[in-house]
View 1 (cartoon, rainbow, N blue to C red):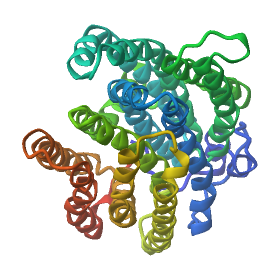
View 2: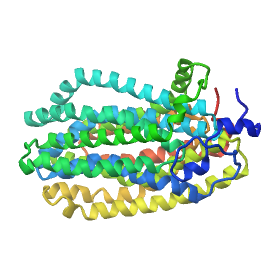
View 3: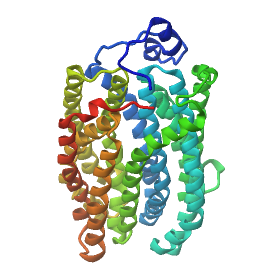
View 4: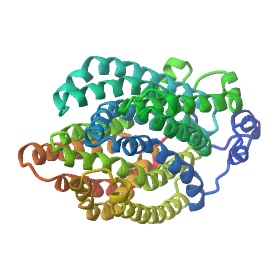
Length: 483
């Protein structure tokens, strides 16, 4: 095992380390650099976080855009989207889960400067993503129809949901590649390139979806399915852009000899062992969210439509805090890779935490604007649906603060190797609390959608003490990188 605390001689640094100055200029090149022990400032977190925030908004915005575009078709069309997103979201969540693990692994590799480590993390992450979606799409092909028939309110909703998911499978394949490449660039500190890919893709998504939903300019009118077609085209272009940039700017990695753990299979196995707790955490969260989404289908159509509309907004606006936490985790992983674990690391985290509180305040303000403006944004919806949206406001004003602080803890603990502990916090809070509580409230107590929505806040409160006590203990500072 390489001792990350032992200084490397200049000759080794020249052959094994990438250029941090090149990365700061947005160029992933084969230049060399000397390892630095400087502690990044809060500004460094901001520089990483803002492109990730905008990109994440665009990712979650796919569903928001689709919901807004089809809302003019009525509550039944929105219900199609909600049902389809709950099913397809399971696979997208798995892709994001494994890609998040790849992002941390790449950040660790970048911190050590080992090019073979970087190459191993990239290829292992890509292979794992492709295997996951191959298995997932096969299972989806056999099971989606029965789930849709059981949960759809009408035959028309069931038929349209099947069509939507069939087309959306192309989005899933593209995201498997695009999310892995995004994680590689993010882990290396170059968060702007993934942003550029979405700046290219989102306008194409919106324009194509509008044309295909309504049959404009002589195109066929596909209705709800047209939204899936626009998303598929945009996702393919986004993945293609990142793949092209990867080959142009980091092609030298393909010429690096050797693998992190001796052979590719050994490196793949080690990557998978590292990734599984993180993937399980995110997979559990995604599955729990989508199981709850399927339970929400038992609501009356107006309440179900209100929940379908607000949940993507919760994800979109919440990316301000989540991206800040992810950027913090990336830098912590890089610092641990360089052997930093003293007061400087604590000082960095203190500044990052203050920034998280500011981000939470911004998120709460955005939630307020969204809810207050909902009668204008969704003017075509029923009055009862818009009234339900207003009842969510008190919960949304509080939610960002415990959620943002928990996110800082979770990303920092993962960077320090505490992946199993983080997994347990998420899994047990979801499956012993939120999912059963949702089922009881909806299926047995027949409570209103507002009470069910409040479970999002209560879950964060449940996780608060275990996260913060583990951070305070500090064992994570000694973990992180191993072979």
